[in-house]
Image (cartoon, rainbow, N blue to C red; front, side):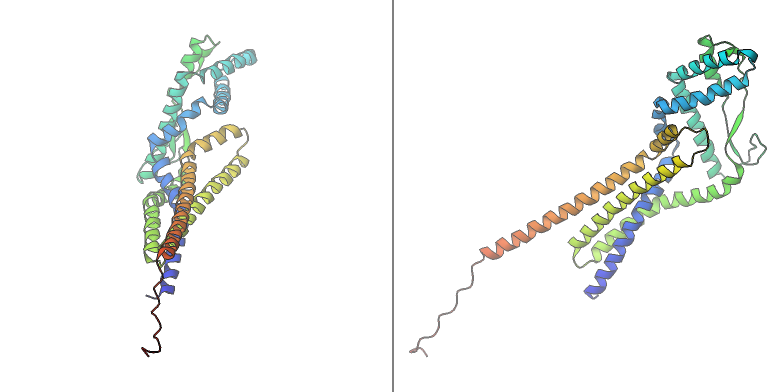
Length: 310
């Protein structure tokens, strides 16, 4: 194969590999990070100690408790006690347990719906296939804590088995299809990117340059992935519904994408390190060749024939 054609094919394969790499990292994160209940709960667990998340949950839970209990003219007084008690509750080990339990239940319910085409469940609005969770265990823990703190009327808080819809039925069909694509892409995109990169390097006439180009493309892919995460974060926080705490939503986004941000930094660091290593070794190899050429003695010229020999 002509050298020009080999270089062109090598460049195309390497460029395609570097293009697929950030998409492969994104799909693998979604398929093996977000889709794993244990990893999801572990990623969300530290948020139970985040003050913005604690305040957001306390405000919503406190408002819900006051709304559920008919306190009449004592509403302002009870609301003050309830808000203080709920905020205090968010600093306890019981809250962290309830937080993990709620996250695990929600994640398992969503995964079960996405992976089971024949699931039939009726949500609180009668929509077939809606994903719901029961908040009664969490409410019971809150009621127990408020009762122990002698909050007025805490014993009257109802512990109803209220199923809250977390995924509407009409969203399940497209989400199932997308989830299946992610499960496949999460494995095959990184593998394909690796195979293309190795093939491009093996096909190149100058493999050192091909390795350098692959490394720089990997670093660029990692940088673009990090920039994309920052842009999506900004857009997400700018389009929040009314009443949703932006700091709390930002903390949740950062917790969910922490692994992906780490991957982007690793790709950037790995690519730049390999490229720098190839540059250093190339300079060393050139210097070694020059020293070797300068140390080789020049050939002794043959003596010119004398007139007598001629």
